[in-house]
Length: 104
Ligand SMILES: [Zn+2]
Image (cartoon, rainbow, N blue to C red):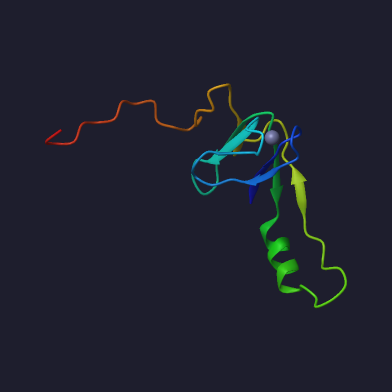
């Protein structure tokens, strides 16, 4: 699971296929597909290890502390989670002009 952390407002945002921003709007990001995502502004990319999160949810106790799960800061150079510039454009978007449909 890919998320962004904003160092300005401390918001953590779970990314979706539509662009999402933190509360202060200084950080943003989105998924391109099921694997690749991008982020911009002040965003620090982070990830949750899905299997360990799911296991911790399954093991949720009635009382006391629940189990830990794995989370990590994504490295600067990551082929599936890329930083983008000011305009926040999807780095994997096709640069080809869209074909006109018949009847347009
Ligand atoms: Zn923010």
